[in-house]
Length: 397
Ligand SMILES: Cc1cc2nc3c(=O)[nH]c(=O)nc-3n(C[C@H](O)[C@H](O)[C@H](O)COP(=O)(O)OP(=O)(O)OC[C@H]3O[C@@H](n4cnc5c(N)ncnc54)[C@H](O)[C@@H]3O)c2cc1C
Image 1 (tube, rainbow, N blue to C red):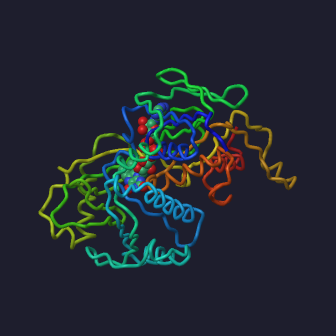
Image 2 (tube, rainbow, N blue to C red; image 1 turned 135 degrees about the vertical axis):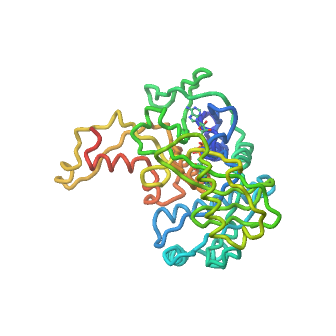
């Protein structure tokens, strides 16, 4: 289809917004990217190093199916655009299976998800001596450089220090009018990726999203150190640009921006205990002196991303009760939408692995193309799932 006359506005220049710009660029849609900050990847996507690998469950689930497909999609984009030459990174992620429970879960995940050796295989991680899953194409990567490179490939018109203040669908529902700190923009499609700042948008208030505080520390690269990422509950990345990242502590309740030195210290102690052969190679360190970064991820109630056309709950027919429909053996509820508005949020702690694929799914659905995923998996991502849950529990009034 020819979309050349269409204009899309993408709000948020993190990894989610950048990924949407790439999916729009593939379809030749003119794109304006807004961010209220002074440049891209200043918030959740602004950590110095993050890890890319898929989420696995013991039995095959929509979550593991989606995450594996998202990981493969990430790798296909990585290869297609030669990102290995452009984005600082180190290949290889070890995921320790050092308890009976984790061994049971992850070794079975390989079988139930029919994972091939080139994606993940059982192996011994040398610094812990533990059985592990090794993802040879998993990565320690700079999220900032990844976001910037995706934006370079997508080439949107960028407006930084430009905040979306409000938006509304115009009367015929085919255009959206955005009110920004720099004036009005009319567009054919609006994509919302505000991350943890979702709560400032009244159209998103009903979504069960949470802002979660995360803290990481930057350790100067040691002379002898791990050349791949290691995950053991916490994680230590491979070194990039002279630093390694040790992460992460998370807190859903207390959200202060100041670093917590005691958490840096406890992550350090855990590292020494879990990877003794690694830390024995290092000089003694004072973890309270390491550079610390606090940022906020956005997590949905079921920890799965939120990807899809945005329901318009102001148009919901609240007289339609689930219980009444059940009695008539017809459980359908008609969901009204903002026809030209899509959302990508709730990327949780897997934004780097999941954003590109989520964006491709979102853009293809907004343009009514054939979906790259099954209807069941898409249902598990759509914002509708929360609305239907609330409707069933009679929580919408
Ligand atoms: C401590 C920590 C460690 C993590 N480690 C990893 C990891 O190792 N691997 C991994 O895959 N994931 C990791 N994550 C998760 C990952 O960082 C996030 O899932 C991802 O960065 C989210 O990207 P985003 O684009 O949705 O949000 P953000 O990067 O926060 O982007 C949202 C953007 O929207 C802009 N914005 C908001 N409101 C407006 C408005 N009204 N107008 C204009 N612009 C607006 C903001 O300025 C911001 O730039 C980690 C997260 C944290 C907090």
